[in-house]
Length: 229
Ligand SMILES: N[C@@H](CCC(=O)N[C@@H](CS)C(=O)NCC(=O)O)C(=O)O
Image 1 (cartoon, rainbow, N blue to C red):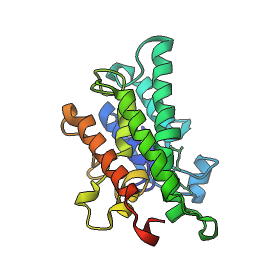
Image 2 (image 1 turned 120 degrees about the horizontal axis):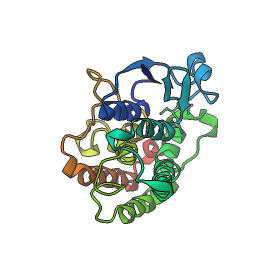
Image 3 (image 1 turned 30 degrees about the vertical axis):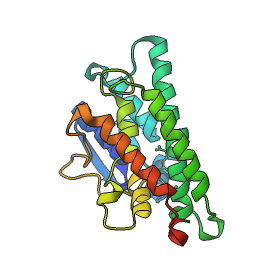
């Protein structure tokens, strides 16, 4: 059986989401970031990690692709052929190394890095994220989903980045809650084994996801003094 390993509220949520979409049984194994248990599975000490019997897969995008490929009959993987694979890889790399990077960078400088190396990355992160939201809109065009007319691992990966409470519905400071909900610490991902944010209405998936990204972009743009870094 699959083991989805991570801390509650970490990117393990996208792995759980994939497993739920694919209808696969799994165990959620709670492991703290950079704990000895995490280092035993991933040289960087980061989560999530997926184990599939003897195989260990690290890095959330790779895990999502692995699962989509392994259960290709469920239709969440790449379009056919080498061109389809390139299209999928391109989306996955865009999602993590370009789209998610400014969100994650800001979060790291606010909460994760040792205090003496933290700097104010707020304006640069806001600029980069606004650029990436435009790029995402252009990439999507008028397609219902990233790879065309079916929901795939790409939508899970990007959708998970926009998951969590919309800033306007949050009780805490919008910018802080947005960052926390977006990049990493979004509260328990497992509620009765079902990811909190599994889309209820597929037709509105990208409409609501883009709405959340735009809310995040707006909260980035708002100066919030020291709290916003
Ligand atoms: N590229 C990795 C990044 C994993 C990652 O940074 N995970 C966070 C939790 S969401 C972590 O373990 N952070 C620990 C740290 O940065 O010290 C992935 O997508 O899985």
